[in-house]
Every structure is written in structure tokens, then in C-alpha cells.
Image 1 (cartoon, rainbow, N blue to C red):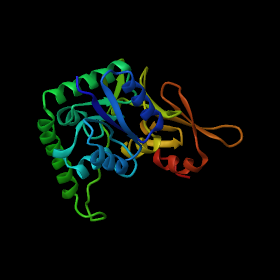
Image 2: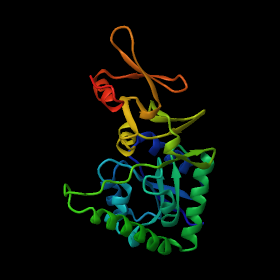
Image 3: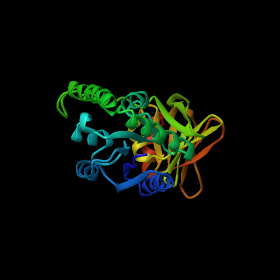
Length: 270
């Protein structure tokens, strides 16, 4: 069996280390390099010509899709996208790449993606996948072009998230955003609360804030985002601290520098 030469691309050190550790356990696999950003990924692909790339989608600066644009879909190695949600449409990834894995993923899901990648490379299916990926990129670029120059009147923004893909026990569950009640930070992860269910994704609160409809969600604290129409009571605690009480009784702290805008959002102008 030919040794599979793999490049790992992820801006999060722990995520890179996890992929490296999982790949190190696999027979016939060599990690030729592990890099932290899109620019280094482009250079590594051109220099090393790996057989397979585990490519993070959401990276500051040059994203995973920017890397593909720079290299060219027809010149890309077999690619497994690594993503925290379906921001760029999970269905498109499934068609355009060997596979995709959603953070946080378990060992079984990783092994499934690696097996699928090996099979595609052995069957020489990378060319077919490249054509599909080119079509996806063409559609994304056409959408951006139709928005007009930056700052032009009527320029379209990316659509707000309607669903978030969450991986649990090797399966991907799609959580409709309309079911989300609040989101809180938990270290490098975000906890999504929807009814009596809790889902964990590896994503920054800043990114979630930017991708959720501001007419429906508001970041009340650096570690909390709430659905506005679920706020039942605005509480002022001793010492001048604020909190909100949601339907169902959950209470979440509100930063003092956000209280004025929150009052305006819920119709309690001072």
C-alpha cells in the first residue's frame, strides 16, 4: 500500500495536534507538514504536493476556500474539509470534497473520512472531485460578484445562518437556528442550548455573533449570546450588575457596556 502523504491545515493548535495524533496511529500515513494558516497551506501544497489535505474552512485571513482558489480546484490534492458548521453549505462540501468533518469530531468519524480519502485516491477520483469543487467555487464567486463593489449601495451580505451542523458520536446533526435559545462560551468551545438539548461546537463567539441575524440574536456578554424574543425580564442586581431572565428561568449576566443597546433592542429605551 502506497504511503499516503498528508498535509494538516488548521489555525487552532489543539485541532492540529488532534489530527496529527490521529494520523500518527494510522498505518501507511505520513504527515508531511502541519501549518496554521492559509498562506502557509498554499506554500506547502506547492512545495510538497501532498496526496491529501485536511483543510480547515474557517481561518482568519485566508480561509480554506481561499486556499483552493489560490491553488486552483484542478490542482488541489484530495481534500477533507474541517468545519465547525455548515456556513458554506455542508451539502456542497459533501459533493465537492472527498469528505468533511465537523468539529468536534470523534475518532470513528475521522477514520471514516480517512478511509474515504484513501479510496478516492486509489480509484483516481480526485479529478472528478476537482471539477465539482470548481463548480462550487464558481457559484460562490458569482454570488460575491453580483453583490457589486465593496461599499456599493445594495451590496449583499452573506446570508445569516439558518442551521448549524453539530457532530456527536460520529453523526452530524443539523440544528435549526430558530430552535436556539442561547449560546455560551465554554473555553475554546461554544455551547448551543436549544430546548432541553445542549450541543458543543468549536467556534469563536465573535464569529457566531457575526453570522447570526442581529434582529433575532444579541451578544449580551463576551461569553453569551441570547435570542431576543426569549428575554422575559431584565434584572438589576445589587452592585449595579445586570442580567436577563429567559423563558424557562435561565439567567445570564449582561455586560454593563451592552446594557444600553440591549434595552433599545427590547424596547426599553432610557
